[in-house]
Length: 590
Image 1: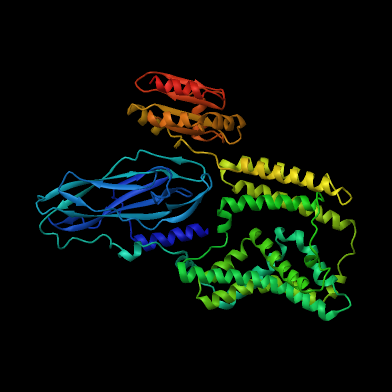
Image 2: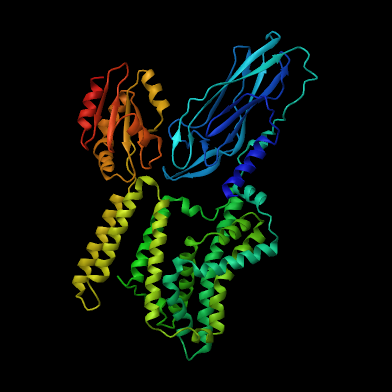
């Protein structure tokens, strides 16, 4: 079971409680969600109070947006109850939303997923006559997965409530959770409920997690420097060699001491926890890390070399040399952790769920685990002598590591938000070219002026292209995901519909986006004319928009934009890249 499923399960049981579902309850079933409603009391006296429960059973990997503050547009889940009888409905009570990173938008949102319940309290007016009355529940909002979003027109659900003076013997179908149960659940509370390792097991897991950091691809480029620094310097002074090795281990521990300090601050000040892996939910971090991996791969391919200062290369035995050794250890820890998963995440999560003292000890044990191999190399350097002698195998191994780093970079690009993913791929190529300029166009024997000119050009090219390619595109138009229901409803409401058929792999579609839909005058008239703008994604063959493009609109491919006018006034289609003025004119005439 995934961590996200565990968290959603906890939220459900805290907010909704566990109760059995009767077979004859009003139910609406779709391919994304099953809705059921139930009354707390089947019979209520005039002037009495009760509660209506709306239960959601979501299909796997589907969710509703939980908060209007974070939901795009007005797509958050809304639950409304109404009745023609004299019944006053209170504000719906929702369970706490759970953070979810939307890769397509590149932001963190609050969502509802798996099983959850929404409660609507109500009061029957004292003047309401006895008898059976109908309560109707209407559900609105976008239901989304990682691939697509839909805004279905859910059929209302009806349930019968009996009003009677004698309702004292009526059975209570469920108990409304206490108000405290509906408060947001902190990540610390979630972790403490889900992780129940013993202290010794957790410390062993932390030690193993630290050991695993030494084989993470991100740290491989500095491993040769690390070994040479610990073992190769001060060969005739064993005491100094041991000192430098211990300082290197201290640098590693210093990094994890910083993590422990952050954990303490989050617990005391914010009552929350920084989950390991949250960095991969940050688009900026993912993009920067991807480019770092590309640069490190170029280094492994000898496209350029890294010349370290004397304090880092071990050529000095001064105080700077000692501080450089600590810095190298700190750098090794920093480089290893972003590429780490699995065991480290489990160990770090357990630490965050504990009181401060065992939590700090567990985090430091991760650092001890990482430092342990270097401590052994320092105290028993004879192990180094058993390694194969330098030769061609080292060059082959180094370049093989470069290909591994490129593979990881490609995977990281798939995590980057869709709107800048293509730009990130182009920038990776340009960055590689700039690295080649830096190390291949000039060398140690080149004139200083040539080095300055060429390397300045390389840096400027990388900065300018990065600013241009990695900038998030302007979203001037509020696009709806493709849904035939949205289109038909808009036309029946006398609203024009603009459908933009596009695909992630379509370069011409990117041009249309920049040349037409990022124009301010186009966005303004779409808003002024109350046009319903629909983004029809045809990236995959089985997407609804792909099927509609062929079977409904009879178009052979993308890009194509279709303006549908209501009241039988026809349609207009554009297949080129510069139709902005024509679109404006067509809307002015509407």
